[in-house]
Amino acid sequence: MAPTKGQAALPDGEVCSLVNALSQAIDRHTRRVAEQFGLTAAQAIALRELAEPRTLRALSERMHCEASNATFVADRLEAMGLLERRPHPTDRRAKLLHLTPEGAALRKQVVKSLGTDSPLGRLSQEEQAVLRDLLQRAVG
Image (cartoon, rainbow, N blue to C red; front, side):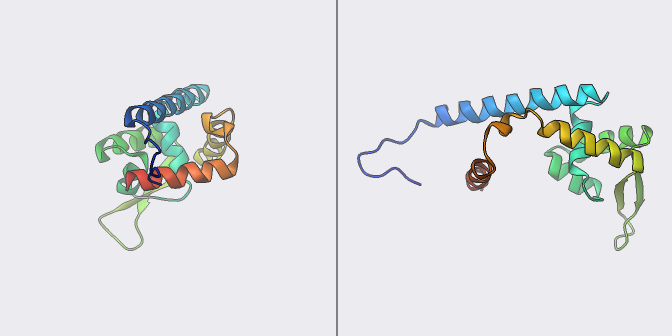
């Protein structure tokens, strides 16, 4: 919402600073959780995003990283026995990343831990939904 007449807009720097502080708090929390499971933050994020089988491209989009980074993370998770690549049912050029039973069990623990004491956990579900909607509007 634009400010009404006579109402000053917040300085962009204040909002940017708060968004940055939240991002850093979430990053610290993610790293702490990942360490508990012997993972990197990127591996924990990949597990979180693999609620269903995805292509590497889709995983990289959800992780907000380059495809080469997602490939490296997937390679490590595969070497750890947590995921496997399977042929895509409709695109023979693509592979789908599927969690193994061990990967699915670890994902469940990681997701639960990410939700415990999360910086966003200080907000109610309604407040989180409002924040999500506002952030979606801001990023376009």
